[in-house]
Image (cartoon, one colour):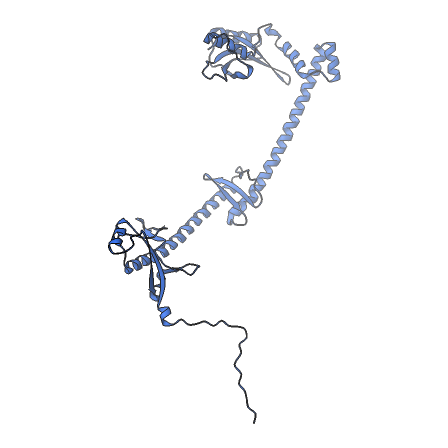
Length: 378
């Protein structure tokens, strides 16, 4: 008769063996509780035989029914929920305080449990409050972006920020005193249409600017050619043989020709004295007279000049303006004042001198001459 041997059952794969904790292990958990004693609390601790330290740390055996009052970090350290603390303000809003509770007397175990229970409840309210606030903020932001998008798309004159330049996928738009980033990969609704529209307008503006530059360049070249033509005609009629020879060779400076043209245009004024731009000499003479110091020296770089149309005129100055205007009725005649001051000595008084500016348009040229005006104002 053959015997049958029974083998032990084999399982496929290695299975971890979990040990069931005994009743003594699952009944309580060793937990660290940390709190702070005020000065009165430290005194009470010393009177009770304690160490009187501000930061106190004790170990509790927390039963399984109160494990919701315990937090365990990633290192497996269990702590009673005393820090951070959560408190409510007058508006029933929960605030988070990153500090341990402070006691004026050593707390009992039940005091610590009550503080941990309060923290546990308020922590849930705090996170619910944050979720609500974040959702409200996101909704407000979404409404803002949608409103900005509607205005931007509807107003063809609006533009995105130039730097960085808008692309078909991203751009910045200034709205309500802030820069808003619009991105087709994250935005929704009408806000997604802003980057491609902003890029389209950006490219159109570049093209229009390029066209304007070409047009302005062509206009300037045409004006320059017209000036060359007028100068050539004038030199041919009024220039000397030597000037005509240089003009034919293309080496006659236009400034020289313009000076001759200006002399002819202002011939009616005759030999009236021109306004001389001798600021250093004028200011130096004035400061020597004003200070009584004969060795005062003013260099060209020491003079600051501020020029503007005069807002008042003496009788002699007005007479000069009227006389020049009568001699050249088709010209513009303006009384000008030039304020000369010292860059080195800011306490030195400025000197104001006057001139009469006469401008006349001849063909494509605007010719200018400034003549001396009577009087000076210190």
